[in-house]
Image 1 (cartoon, rainbow, N blue to C red):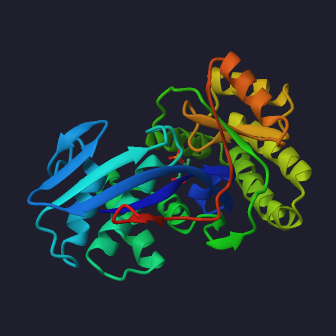
Image 2 (cartoon, protein in one colour; image 1 turned 45 degrees about the vertical axis):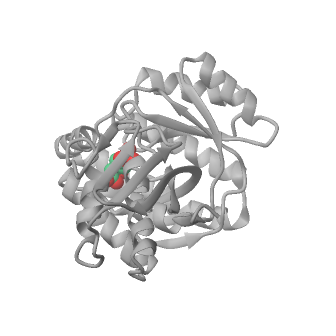
Length: 306
Ligand code: PMV
């Protein structure tokens, strides 16, 4: 049996603006989806969603990933078991992580010798097959790990402070929110375009600050980014509650991560403030997870149980 894992991601800066070609900074987090694979008589996929064969309704990402690998590997029978620390559908990149980890595990089991670039590319194609349209960001960051500037694909140094995630547990549709921003931009181009451009400028400014590990200034800019996300209409009362609960309890900064509407927010913390920020997020009705930026993207966990 081979076990591979791949991380989820958060946005420090730039969601929504990146749709219009502006820069964003994404950060892989140490919350992983693990995929165990072994050869078997039939194709079997097991997760908390159930046990199926190839099933594009229940296990779409894994099913399409197997089909994508079939021209390269003689996959007749295979048992795949999925375990995830990432909440599903909350903007943390759970679908990218399961896709990337499945492709890597099949690559190793069938000795296809794919490069990381190949894996990122194939995983992006799988996401497009499932979703119709998908940005390459999640699959790229999950494959490569670390901190990545998008669309340049520039690797930046690690963010070395705890990151507290607050999940509203409210479903958010990326497609719908991206559509709402597009409508607003069409209606008020002279107002919305500068906002999106300012968000992109913040990512560019933050690049140097990440090198300098100046988390205080990064945090001030993240808070400005949060204000601009609210301005373009992707906030919600629940997200604001969690954002301010974090800020009022010692967070360096806090903002929405991903599409907004529902989903998650993040706070940058110090080692000694992370748990009180997490508690404040929980008291404000969210579900908190304390995590960190991880330099490792997709990786082999164990080979034959070792
Ligand atoms: O919530 P997520 O992880 O799907 O992030 C969406 C990020 C957007 O910039 C809003 C859309 C995109 O495709 O980049």
